[in-house]
Amino acid sequence: MKYQAIIFDLDGVICHTDRYHYLAWKEVADEIGVSFTEEINNRLRGVSRKESLEILLEPYQGELTAEAKDYYLEKKNNRYRGLLENMTPGDVDPQVKKALDCIKERGMRVAVASSSKNAPLILEKIGLRDYFAVVVHGGDVSRAKPDPEVFVTAGVRLDVRPEDCLVVEDAKAGVEAALAAGMDCAGVGDAAEAPGVTYRLCEVADILAVL
Ligand code: BG6
Ligand code: MG
Image 1 (spheres, rainbow, N blue to C red):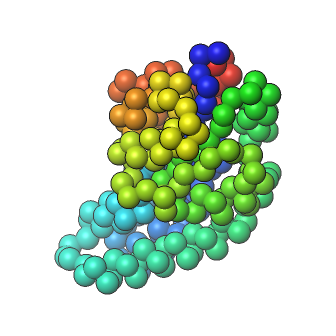
Image 2: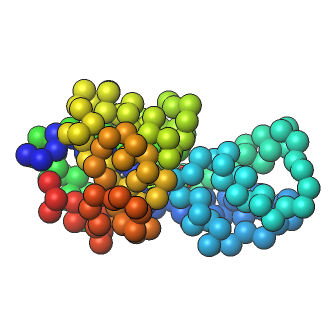
């Protein structure tokens, strides 16, 4: 077997939360009075909540206090968590679920490494809380992707060497982080075009072909 472990990003790989992020950030942007589009929302993939707010504030003429930023971050997260309540196991693409089952049958170790502090809630809602041997999320690390910390931590907790881990990512920041952790990386969507990506996938289920 080429790899002993697979480390999945969550948002955009196992399930899709873009729409909920968009709706929650849009409310914040409207309150601040800046424009917020789907294109801007796409730039937030893989980016931490704090950095996302900085991107949203790019067109803002002025300076927000640290307290005001905290208020908007909390507002966004409360709204986002409310929207996540709509998620169910039906939000996992059946092909992805099939691929996950196949990977388990092969005896590989499987982890999630996500920038999101809400990853445990999302996994609970989509019925995959117990599927992964290791879950590393935004609350477990001090540096967000593209820093490798989240993947390095997952590798250590899996007790698998970086060169024996394969990461699956949908964001360029995630590919950069995986490669910096010394791991191979399979990219879908935008991440398939990221510099240095090891495998370009059309969809997540194609991962089975590279194992
Ligand atoms: C990533 C998403 O998984 O988590 C980003 O791709 C998001 O869009 C980031 O900003 C942080 O998420 P959260 O849930 O901690 O605000
Ligand atoms: Mg992602």
